[in-house]
Image (cartoon, rainbow, N blue to C red; front, side, top):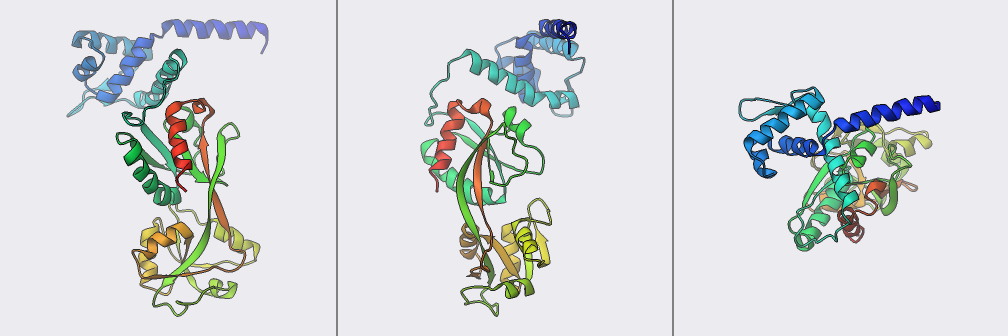
Amino acid sequence: MNNNDLSIHEINTNSMLRRIDLNLLLVFDVLMQEKNVSRAAERVFLSQSAMSNALRRLREMLDDPILVRGAKEMQPTPRALALEAPVRFILQQVVRTIQPAQPFEPNTSRARFIIGMNDYSENVVLPALAACLHQSAPNVELVAHMLTAEDPEPLLETGQLSFIIGVETYSKVSKRLRSENWISDRLVCLVSQNHPLAGRQHLNLKQFEELRHVYPSPLGLRTNIVETWLAEQGLQRSIAVTTRNYWVAAQIVSGSDYLLSVPFRIATKLMNHFPLCLLEPPKGFPGFRLNLIWHPLYESDPETQWVLNQVRKLF
């Protein structure tokens, strides 16, 4: 890009910025939350006519209806839904930029933490964190957001995720994100208490390969660290049932001769609810590590860093 191109780009950008009224972005955010002109007006201490006028200007600025009348409340258009999270993030960043960071007060805060989790962290970490915050931050809200194969960086950058608790090998983590090694766990095997191998201490590789398996896969994927490890041995296990839930898998295994491979912390929970026996897996069986992942924009954010510190203390 040459200097002339840069000048044209700056002119176009400045022209666009002059058209944007930051107050209208605040109006947009409140309208998207309330989906009602009267309630939105009350939230920002405007008259209903002033709010209606602001909505008209918003529609002109964005060239979109934004909200249309529905049966019970106004419904956002697809463009409004697409803009909702980015606009909220912009407003949050303006506040953070202008105001000095305020100390986080857990006793009185009503912060909402949206945590990217896999099935392991939701089953193991979320209950422990909820119990911890019930005492130290009784009014905050925790929201578990199931991680998918999609890139999480945009969700972290726009504040749609506060942070992630995910496996160390989580393939979509950008180098731009902050990532910290946290806890590790090992995989063990579970069988019914009526299984022929119940009561043994260990499984050998031959036994593991010959048995049929129940495979918990929340995302419906056909491979995980067990398949990868077996492939390195030139082996492949026989899957009898694939389910998205550890608890359903345990229920199936407790009434059959199938085998279930799960993390040790999950196994201890399942054994408290189902008639299952723990067997140590074949030698060299893989384990994994969980990482804490957040966006550098929140490196100095008191709320995010406080709750991350609470997570660090759990195990």
